[in-house]
Image (cartoon, rainbow, N blue to C red; front, top):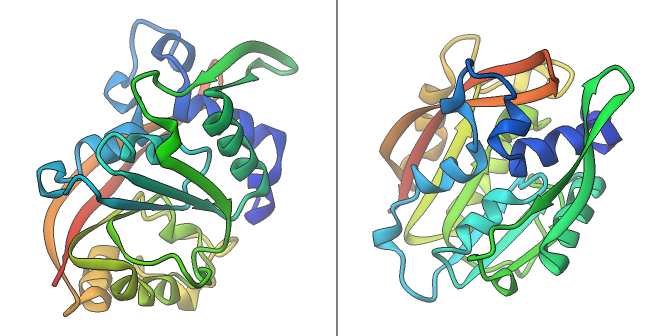
Length: 248
């Protein structure tokens, strides 16, 4: 599958549904893990300490995919920037920022699909949000510093996650928050085994402690379930390990 998967129409459809799907679209059954819905919003709502944010706070969503978490950050921050490597994902997020909605379809069975509309919640100020295509490991100059940096389901899809983490002390302002959420699915299709942060000598959280100290201190930890629908009868159910770190 590897990185090219995220440029496919299948991936775009699945992630628009994952980020913006209504509960009965994602899970059209009266049973199942309903607590795993709305994951991109929960990464912000459950993990960001909003009481610590000033009115002029800035947020960066690295690996933003199609942008739902970036919009959620704009509820609490004057500016929210979303960056993703996928051209397809970045373009879709940009369309949602401009128009507030995007028509798409998601799989039901085989070639059968269901029409849907991805919509940004109407109470979010989209003018606070911008999207760009970029590599989380080699970020462009001029981004500045941020009061919140979110990295959701990103580190185990990078060729060299440690190199990405090296940039963070310069990106997060003093007292700022770093949110990392990951199911820790280390696969050689994405990350050479020598670059894995976990799953070998120690688990991912232990490596994060080593790499982020002394610039950051661990401030919170959560287990966040999430559900990605492939079609009406096939799902990926995972549990992300989410952590909040404070910049010293």
